[in-house]
Length: 116
Length: 111
Image (cartoon, rainbow over all chains, first blue to last red; front, side, top):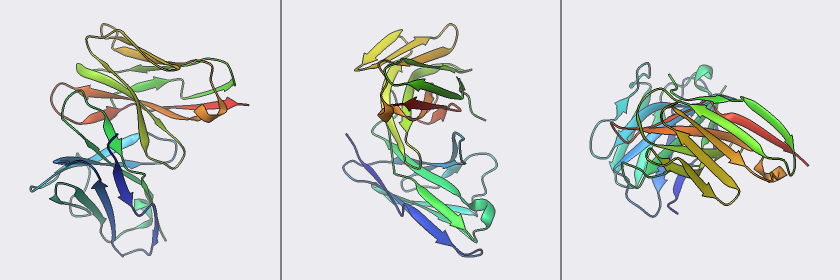
């Protein structure tokens, strides 16, 4: 099956710094990628839809200036958490699909972000 | 907000027993999917059932879909300790490519 690789798997950063998370589709091209946030023992919350070559579409309540998304190529989307604070600590996961309808989603391994 | 609601939230069984998880949703769907997540990892796709299908099997997995009740169930037969994980249903709506995830069921299979 298709592979989505996410990096890094874990990151610890200081308050006020920025962190970049990469999501790559290794063996297919993804015009659309999805970024989720997950709190402990909770479900995935969609943050934004990343579109290659255009602006990301953010879900209601997600600050676009805080969570910068760039999808500059068909195989790479990045999420940058700017000026991170402890409340941004969470598990971030990306995914991509081979098509739009009736297809499965492939997920990255996730990134555990801890802001100290 | 999450469309899907799953029950139970947590399920603990003995190896060899069957595990049944349920999912309900609110809007029209193209398909419903089930995913598994091991602790601290990404999600892995298990099975997809289309809106015009009622039942689907894959190995020890059996999924049913009742669109009139807007509900689905996932049955894992002859469970193993390695089945311990969180299981999520996800609905694929009629208007786009985004999936909406349920709250998940934490399954523990005791050896």
